[in-house]
Image (tube, rainbow, N blue to C red; front, top):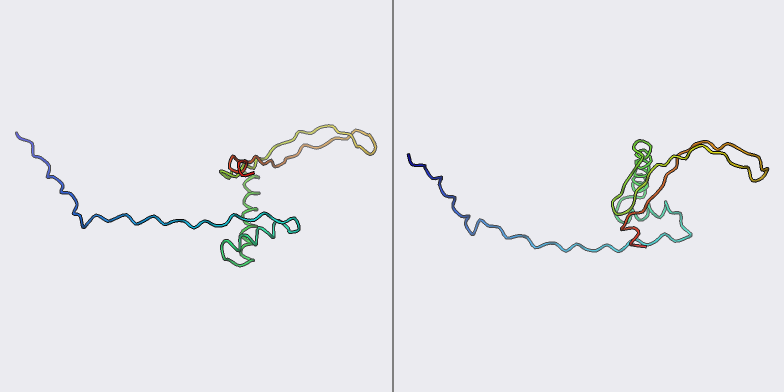
Length: 128
């Protein structure tokens, strides 16, 4: 028995081939300015967010609060928040220890506690 050959697929017509659209050149945004020493950092971040997105000051303030709240909640639950290229926030535990009151010289007990540490990423280190 002879095998039946599958019908050959015809090449697409030249008119059916679409040309690739030229790549759009992304407009470069100016780098954000550093916070001046006389401004509150949170207020400056809200202003930068508002300027970058074109939203209202209230919406920018709410967005910043939501981001910071999410980071706090994630640290509490997972113990780690990582922003690739920027850095990593981690929760570290400090053991209880004995200390000395510098004013009176008496020994005191310092309770165990948790703290947040930040390790900068390679991109952030390189930008400094």
